[in-house]
Length: 231
Image (cartoon, rainbow, N blue to C red; front, side):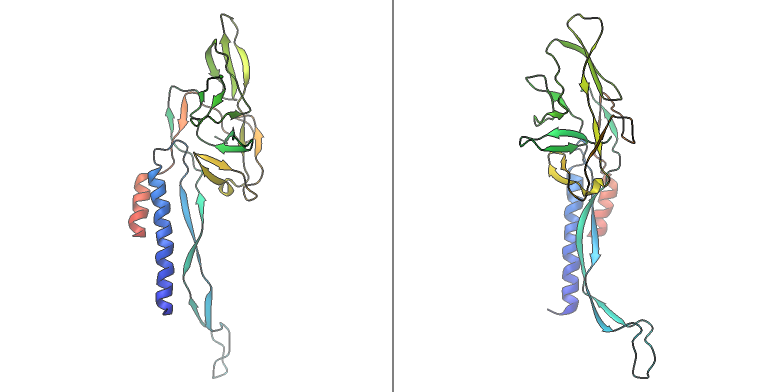
């Protein structure tokens, strides 16, 4: 294949990957807690026809040389963990929540759409329990979640509310190193570093806002402009 055609092919392939990334962002504009991706590009190896600083035939130095690029590739997609808008809901619910998966491993999410299962455990819409586990008695009323994550409720006709547990949050040194596994969940990797758990509102962690959820941080107009530019 002619070198110019090969370089063009790498460009088309890279832009196609970028278009797929943009399309996925737009598709998840209404997904609670979704974080948009940005395609990261890198140039390929260069063919050195004349070395910069080399000697030419007149025994003088070449000021720039001749370096021919061989194209471009997408080296990764970077998650953009900017804050999405907060939407008021009627369901109790920054940092990441910890979710226990069926295999016992812990996943992480920014999706605060929690519900109660048949046993009174706080779970995700897919039924995965919040970690640490918090169980709400069947006869509990006036459930309150404080900004520090403390969950209290009035049980039966008791005057004073009882403490049911505390929602904790975790943070990562490099959140962009998290691996997305679907269902608004992420898995820790060596790139993200180990999770640092703490009380909401302390050590740089956000506070819990009962009755709100974080919407997607995808900006439709920005993504449409990116799509037009890519095409």
